Length: 332
Length: 215
Image (cartoon, rainbow over all chains, first blue to last red; front, side, top):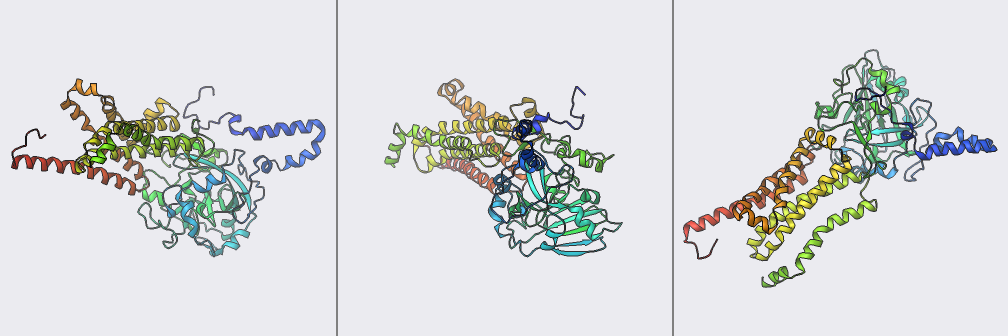
């Protein structure tokens, strides 16, 4: 199609927009190397090209948690990874304050040890997992995902975890289970803003069971090759890359399987603004602002125009079929 | 008291106040160029310049009460400059929003103003403040006549209210009103003083014959 309109769906930017210069330059250099006869040595690098191309350096702040290569489609974006400092000092975690600088300042008190997650509801094998059990349940993978906040900013974060489906398969949902509810910690003693009037506590999020089973839905234990910092939802959180960030609950203590659509925290606070699905969708505006564009933190500098937001945050090829036939304007 | 008056009337006093008023702006520019504005510099700049606009609204509204209470008429010399700095910061605020947030795309800005009531309110406050800034020079006062000029400049009360509503609405998304209440309380106090002053003056005028030359 030559003439693009807002309704023509999945508008990719040109490929040079997607691939950072450093990476495609690296590929070209590699091809040159191969041509010049040093292919043998270079091929080893080619095999590990994702890791090499991204070269995410460990920040050296917390215990290391390595993630292996993921075979899941869409698991690793080649976009430039956001600085660790930005990803850990600019985020929302209302239990520790509503300013995006608050979580990093206040989350030191989060009691991450010992930690357990109760998995219950409509499952054959309900069980309370210790964090240690969860960490070993399936091999840890590195997933470099785009993260799009409903407020209109975005990041690229290398998470470490495994598909939530691995855990779901272990507990065997009953046929009647249709939804998965994530209940997060609400401890007024250690979380100073639990009890503030902004939201109902605990913070609850939920997915439809088929969404939760999608391999991109990540049960997450680390980022940047290390365990999660407290402010980013330690010790275990969800990351659902095709939905707005708030759909990914932090510091999860309970996972419940239900037959009715759970009322989620933001949906209870403002149902007309935050729907159950909250899929990233540039065509459906938030009632108070546009969702057509986003500012990539650390990259779209002061004088750069904001970039276009992609349908399903760029994961349409992987998750689009989950919503086939649904009116996404109604089910926002 | 005389000492205070002397300092305020010193030829260096105005340039000094001018430099002081410019410092928040200089600091922001410095931070922007040395990458100290955090993860989202555009948002930081927009919020900081909005905050300074509100602070200058409070400062300029405080001049008259301070002048009367402390019996320091020389304070009046600074009122125009402070008012113009308030306009300066709102212009920088608006430019930061239009440029850094909207990429100077006029159609996008127009859509955004309609879509977001708090931006509409802030934009209205800016529009209302513009004629005040434009008529701040002496010739304008002469041309308009003091009465009409004063009437126009009473718009500042409405503008202060709109500014606070703009801030309130912006913070409503997170139910975080502490700072909003501080500004609202300051402005309410400064306006309350004016009402009280007005009525007590009238009462004085009614109960005792005015002294010669009193206004």
